[in-house]
Image (tube, rainbow, N blue to C red; front, top):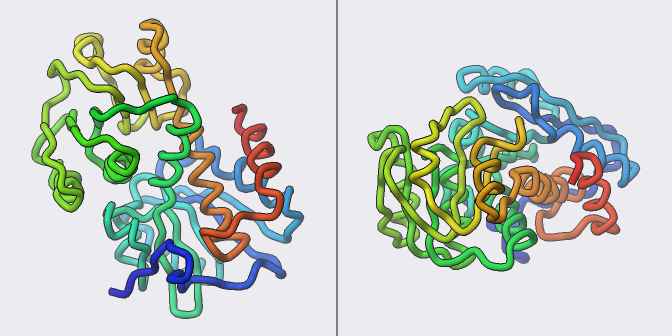
Length: 289
């Protein structure tokens, strides 16, 4: 499979910026709480382009049919549980998607759907903008597609020692494969184990329940909770009570959406949008950051 690389000069997914009406949306399940429409609508309004951004409840087995029925739409953001399944629907993917095994953005081009991962960059921007330092050791709670992206993101900003804290050790195959590609040998523990690291990253969905004993066994100098609804999460409340810094998943959502916006409305992931700093301000306002 040919890969599209994010590096300038290698990107082959370019198109001209939007000049006609175009449709975009976020897909996933559950989707009702998604703030992606608010973020992208803020970008569309600021750019003054003729485009719409919606949201659709789509589960994994529905994705092929949905894409066939919406084959003239320009692009989609993908959330759980579609980030792995989407790789089977694209004709090529970026190098970050290949490394993480996760696609959270697809764009339509003449040759078909192209897959991208903007979560890694989004997570790195979120952490670097909100924390003075991340440290060298990290705990990843969860083993899904988002955890795969967060593993790559953390490794890219200097984290070298990892502990995977999971509900079911038998379901870490994809995550440990990503670790292997990075040259990382993680420690794998079940939820409830006593673990400690510089940064704790929670990738579990909001429906996951962590009991008091499990939370007490997790020690970290800072918390990055990818969940943003409801907020604050139980973990965020605990870290705040400990007097330690907490980074909301809204920050990652914002920055990955900005990178998506470059693809959707500009055509090139590396080229900033016109007056991008003002666009970021509008996006922050749209989601209360």
